[in-house]
Image 1 (tube, protein in one colour):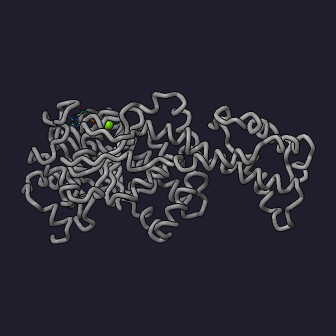
Image 2 (image 1 turned 180 degrees about the horizontal axis):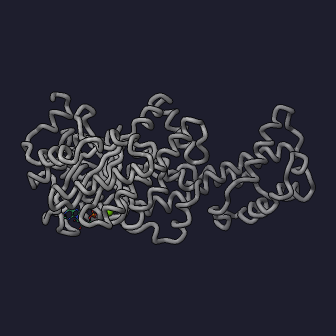
Image 3 (image 1 turned 30 degrees about the horizontal axis):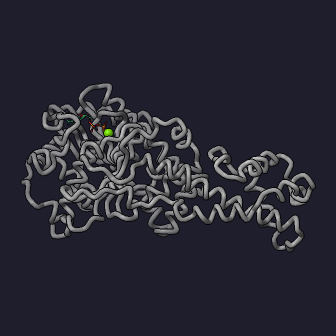
Length: 441
Ligand SMILES: Nc1ncnc2c1ncn2[C@@H]1O[C@H](COP(=O)(O)OP(=O)(O)O)[C@@H](O)[C@H]1O
Ligand SMILES: [Mg+2]
């Protein structure tokens, strides 16, 4: 499985356009239109999802449904489950049927109870909601096991119908997790699957608040992770500026492709800044990982990856994360030269050039092209229709599929980089990619 993220510093730089065409190129290269589990294109733009509209393919459920389900079912039921196990321990303690060995567990339950984040919990949704609410209002008076036995708290515990809690929990358990397949739409014509949004999820205030809650974010990540597991290649169209929400994912994925909009100088500066910011986050994350200092969501996410793939694989993936640049909206090839100089200079100033000069690869050069500039219709999907543009996308796809192809890095000279990227568009529109993908080349 490879997860590739297409990142840009703001809207309109070409992330979505490139994501769609890269997904198409990967699909063709893998030559497996029969199987539905090869390539999935993910619209992670929670503000302005566009892919389902552009490709006119609509999954049964969108990210909006996902957020509703996670918020109103998954999150609520998970919380009830945690709460239920705490209540059981408290009750046992009050009734005196605990042994000395149970003590650490009881202490742990008290700690969980005191620290549970209940901000997103819908107390009013449940008949026992008021009592539960009261339970949490009492957190300040419970410090040690003996406090649980105090009369007022004991009375409150007795008023909570724990069997009801259990029943509601059990009754809702089954539908609490989103059914992944309902969110994926396989597009026959293109041979890849998509998932994502239709309406801006972050347009809804409660969802805007939720996305910043670690507990909620963890559920969102769990879902994304589940989808990724189903496919060989996942292309993420990553929201501008919204990367923070999925930073654990971004830091652990295989490859990041930065879209450099070089149509104007402000865009260039923004692109460089986005790359540098990403590197900073990644370095922090990696350092914390190697020193065992990851916390919270980052830690739980990485722990999960380690359980699944083994520590060695995770460490390797983190250490070797590939970072690549695609220049977009290029009018003349030589325009990339000042952009490269600016990037090197910027990294140099931050003492990051030496570390990254061989690591940042230049994998694509997309022209500013009138075909691409046909907005909001299927002109966006030019792959397979325009030979030159397709070849350029193939070059990018090859950087994802084939470990062995050598790409210029920042350490190369500008003219070497230009020559390389320019040459690619003239390469035959043949089956080179297919051969590469199937290991014949
Ligand atoms: N190389 C290009 N040449 C011409 N137009 C482009 C190019 N890349 C993107 N566009 C156009 O710019 C607009 C924004 O592109 P889009 O892929 O939606 O950006 P983003 O996803 O980063 O917001 C679209 O109308 C698209 O057709
Ligand atoms: Mg977009």
